[in-house]
Image (tube, rainbow, N blue to C red; front, top):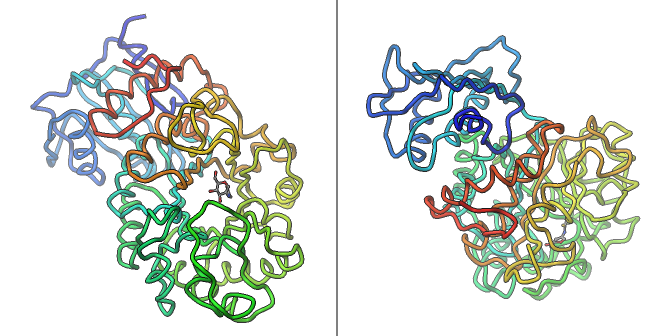
Length: 480
Ligand code: TNX
């Protein structure tokens, strides 16, 4: 096969359809321009990072064209990308589709050189929800660090960023009327080992949400409850059983804290928090945690969720919760997120039968905080070791009995931060495993192929290196 024909499909996630036309290569040069249109400036910025050339955006005809085709069958995020000898065309029904087309185009630019392989790609995602989760509670990451993370994940068409904003060791979002949450529990000495202080003001959070939205990423804020609340109970004594604040904790234990289901103060607090977070977050989801509530009785858990789930709806949002939430009767709109390593889960299956959509995050495949190998300096290993092949080699539609393709909202890879301290730590655990989860979430089931993925992935090492993104040089990949 001539080199250019195989190159056209060298994209992660692999596109749904690839039709190479080997004679139709296009070379980006100093005289290449982009035709003025919505999305053109953003494409120029992306291509500058990929090629080093700042292509001009000009009115009238130009070699690179973006076209919105409103009555097409590209869907919400699909696109067509045509590369021919005389130019490149990106087509989609939506700006998001054009943005994903632009990401594909940038991946086709060689690390050195500027020849694009000729042909046509027609592509659309398998699932509408393709998420990454970052734990900013166990260790706080700044707005700039999270923006760098967003830039790195959109390359793989990840379209949701779930922020785990609160936990036992810290509270990271300013809430009007409850200032001690962040003054105390976002202050010095918070986070695991006291090493991760910080919080987002409401303005900073809004800025992050807007930055994500410009890149077609929906922020999913998580306020974990009724467990994982020690940081809130440090700040406000009325949230504890005896009315006295508790001591701060910076260890890695889980399952010891709980809000009090039988106290009205609890719901006054939760309503204030949910109302504010909903107002600051344009996306459709609020994540209410619900995991590892080992210090909450089963009865109290039901009482609590029966009060909280309607509040989420009251403020116009859909609830996502870790799958323990499915122990209660859920409204159809609620989304359980499966995170365990067991082969089956009765609650999640029942929720699916009742019409809920499910997010798949099985810890033994998608937890980016698991060590790659026993030698990995960062990470935990309670869900096993996860090398790149293990992150890639599974199918979300057959993972849980009773939860098939039609019951899935999508997939999400979670990065918990107990052992992380720097942005390099974050990137090292994320890359190259997140691209595996991204391909599972975007590409058709029948395209999944480890030898192909492994070969395509090798090309990303130099790209990450050039952009200063730390990654784990897994020995499974023949890095170029
Ligand atoms: C389990 S996953 C947790 C987190 C920990 C994580 C560490 C989940 C819903 N709860 O509290 O950070 O394991 O891997």
